[in-house]
Image (cartoon, rainbow, N blue to C red):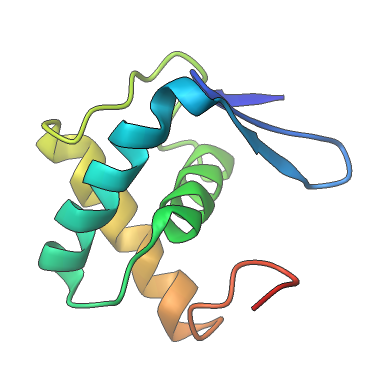
Length: 94
């Protein structure tokens, strides 16, 4: 299932990220770290994207851009859950 262009999630819950959006995800991580004061990395951004899509805040055609303030606001709200509820742990490697 495509979350946004370049990010998809399998039925098993495994996220796949296209290498073509790596720079955008990194830029978003920096922007979101500044906004939230959390230590945000690319995995956190992907988790926020998945949660936002599941909550109906993003659709599969939402373009990723670090310059989109609405996208940043939506993702920042999800990061509060990622860090508040899950302690920033987003995968089995954490």
